[in-house]
Image 1 (spheres, one colour):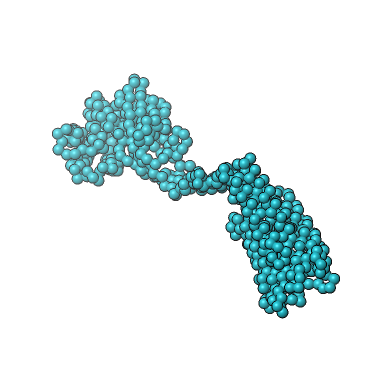
Image 2 (tube, rainbow over the protein chains, first blue to last red):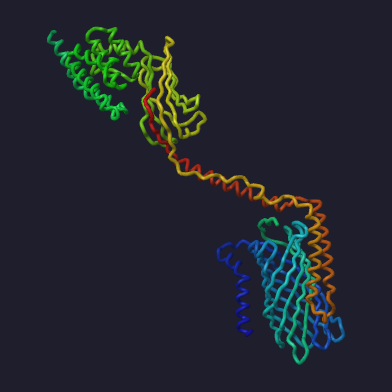
Length: 232
Length: 366
């Protein structure tokens, strides 16, 4: 995919993500939509198989997240995370990771929502810095585990557009997630696990495979007034 | 006869001649049966015309002969109610002129009994005739009600005019009674004499607008001697109204969500937690095996949390089997239904304000 097509696609996604709040402002409804502002802590496990051996780095990441739900069926979240992952295997190097992710969710069914995510990620090591940018599409099923207290969701997404600096994009980019969320009147808490896998094309007989998995804990305060929830 | 007496007789004759066409027209208009029975009654009408002309020309004896033919049971011609009343009236007047006061009163009474609205115009009949007629009214208690005129009215502002009569002083009660009903709406109840103009606001005793249907204006009277009489006239009321909306029925059980969780719900929550834990492990297994086995260590945290949440969810369902979200949803549905019914009621009230009542006369007084 050409750079121009990628930019066009990215711009379209951004317009889709921010259109509802923009419309609200344009219509003079300047009331704050419901949402939450959170702090995020995570343990990240970054694994790379270069074909010459396994590299693994592990460590904490911290950041913040802003969730906005302009409509009961639609939500947007912006998350920024950063941290240093320590090398866990010989031959690995310590790296810093920074990530900015914008995700929109649209409830399609009472138990299923579609997701669109745009992610930018940067790995910095002693020798080099690598930037990743990707656009992924997916969906997640959700159901209450404890009525009115805790919801569970399982998601799967594919990233058709992944750009990695200095390297050809992967043949396969797939991600899965599992999340428990408490969304109360004031508190918004979640515990999630996600894994992203990238299989790069075979080059000179070797295939590079990368994955990053995270166990994420988020604690936030809600703002705005949510409409009453419908019965399941 | 003196000159002044002759002048008085001529004046009286002129008055009678002038009154005759008007009286004839009035009787003709007052008879709804006139067109239908016109041919059968033509001879009676001719006889009456001839008799009244003779009466006006002071040929009273010849007039009496014709008038007696009209009321005779052996008359071969059909005689309408109005014609009979007219004949009795002229018989009474003729006999009063001839000085036969008792007979005059008897015929006037016969006329009054058949039509209590019968009256002698002071400008057309002499004092002697009116004196006899007054005596007849004193001796006869008869009440009546005029047939209602057709009309269309707004029940909020208009009323139906009604006219009743009592031949002499009596306690008179007039009420509107719906067909098939025994109690009526009183529109007049006091001692009175003569013609009374009343009005009915088309409301029942409870204040509601009278529904469409057949009604009777019933007049009852009792005089100081204990003599009673009654009369009634029928009419129909029709509603001219835009169609009203039906209110929505109450929500059926199928329209509402179950407000209690089924007994199988608790184990299902446990199963959900387990499925979530398995799902988290499945997410972990998306990773390539060459990157360090099939299950990543971080998965354990979310899987354990999922199972724990499932257990907590099951306990919660056991302890609190009421589906509060469903209860709230049902309440919202009931409130929405109430709001829609209130809107329908408001629209119907606005349409009821456009209600018009149509009065349809029916039948003669009975």
